[in-house]
Amino acid sequence: MDSRQADGFRKTIVKEFQEIWIVDLLGDLRNKDNICLNQGGSIFNIQTGVAISFLIRNPKLEGCEIHYIHVPEGISGIEKLNWLKHNLLRRLAKTGQLRGITPNQQGMWLNQPQEDWSAWLPVASKQSRTEKTNEVIFKLYSLGVATNRDEWVYGLTEEEVNRKVNYLINCYETKRLNPNANDGGIKWTRAVKNDLYNKVRYVYDQSSIIDSAYRPFTIRKLYFNQKLNEMQSKQKDVFHVRAKFKNLVIVLTGPDSQKPFAVSCVTIIPDLHFVGAACGTICFPIYKYLSNSTRQDNITHWALKQFRKNYSNAQIEKIDIFHYVYAVLHDPRYRQKYALNLKTEFPRIPFHSDFFAWANIGKQLVQLHAYFEQVEPYPLQRVDIKSGIVKVKLKVDKINHCIEIDSHTTLMNIPEQAWQYQLGNRSALEWVLDQYKEKTPKDLTIREKFNTYRFADYKEQVIELLGKVCRVSVDTMRLIELINTYEF
Image 1 (cartoon, rainbow, N blue to C red):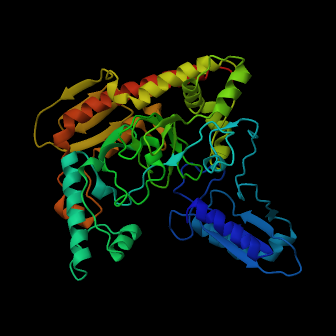
Image 2: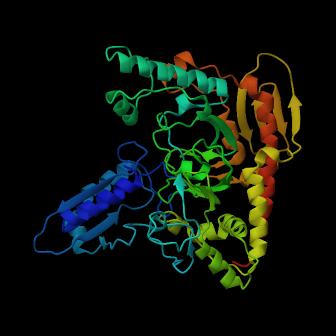
Image 3: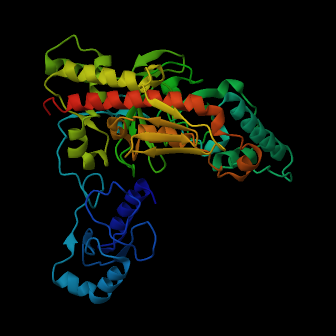
């Protein structure tokens, strides 16, 4: 159950029941970003937390009373079972050990934000996208593209995507024309099944292959086509129909993310899971495009007016605001203090004393992240030892400051700052290494017919990319250190 489903579930049971008693057994070992509690062991030897809930209908009460208790922190699964055995619920209730819970406006029961940032400017809101308000910084926002068949429509080369998508469409068309035919082992989703049921014809479109920001500093070819992308969200308004139009987009982890807050900047369509699974990516573009190809500013006139009024400076432009926002979102003090707020709603932006100092840092960060392919590579020391069979490694050794590329090649003198630049739960360098490893495809058909990737074919390209991402990482951390010297 994801957080949206959980919120819906909570609202439903609050309406249906008058008393809710919850015994939280903790044990959530997957969420490395767990904010408050030492989760301890699991009673079922699983990675997911467990709770016991008692839902009571009581006509004598109006509304709903919620009572909560969690087991002692850090104890093992067996100790939790013993705790349950020796603690009666009615005794815990009489002694007042169960605390009452009042949900906040966002429907959160636990880990409610205590910091008040309501006076700050909202980056975006659901109301602004439906024209109910323009009192936001960005009018339009969008999720990243969700294909629900990544192994089929993403690839390192256009030729690879061409072969996979053509095979998929041919199998679909065979099935459409002959319902008794074998489906060829392609990836079916609800939308594609509905199209098959309605006899919708699929035709391969070469112009649908575009560049996409699949993961941090990892560009992939994508078959960006409505029929084979389960959800394109508003990306056509961001990059237009063929995704060929230029834009500059801040991407960050959504409020419902199970990963640590992360932010980056791209010039091409990002994937929904830009920083990994269980993490929706939200996009805030500098421009938006109408159906007639007309480009409009996406930063509102209201926001421009607020910034100009606050700083008494009519020279502030919308691109300056874009850069300013990007710098603020990189401030470690901001991200630490408002960590709980960022997990429940879109960011809000304060007015710092020196607007253009922050905007200048944001501009440099945007240049590093959005145009990383253009930076000068960091001068890593390459050591080659040619002996024996080549074995791919792509492993980091932070203690010895090196990256083992394979059994023949090692990159030395990786600066400490490079590992400190994190996106989600990995450093930027580790994202690159992860995306170029030789992995067995999960899809059986892809594994059997299209598993042609060999790291050796991309070795030199990856080494060059690592040098560039190392440069980006070091310079990013230098700018973040500069942010720390500014008044918060």
